[in-house]
Image 1 (tube, helix red, strand yellow):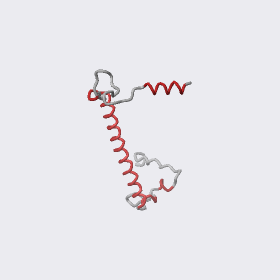
Image 2 (image 1 turned 60 degrees about the vertical axis):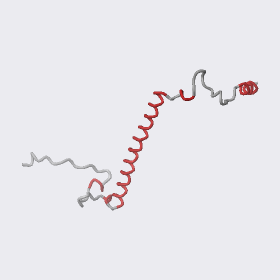
Image 3 (image 1 turned 180 degrees about the vertical axis):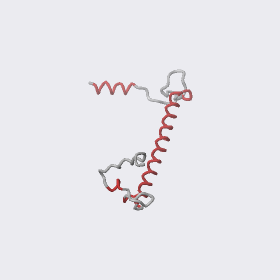
Image 4 (image 1 turned 45 degrees about the vertical axis):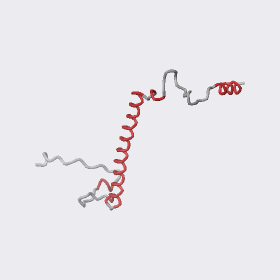
Amino acid sequence: MFVASGLQALSTTPTPGPGNDGLRPGLTADQVTPGLLGFVMTAFMVIAVVMLMVSMTRRIRRVRYQAQFSASGQDSGEAPGGTVDTVAEQPGAEAAPPADRSSAT
């Protein structure tokens, strides 16, 4: 029964033609625009996509730099000055607090 009523509704729907474009009476196709809301939403989407692209570019550069840094052998625990970092060699160790110089004199 539902199928029959659906087919009847489709058969009575007017087909679009050159004179009938589905607009309200009194409107023409050139008068229909998205308006201010459409512009604001489009501008928001453009700004969001540009911000995401900038963020993604930064992250990709950071990953590439880290890959180059680790490929050059610098991740073996050596600091850039050539000294060995003892905290990096011992995974669970914490750095010792600096000595209090005021009581040493």
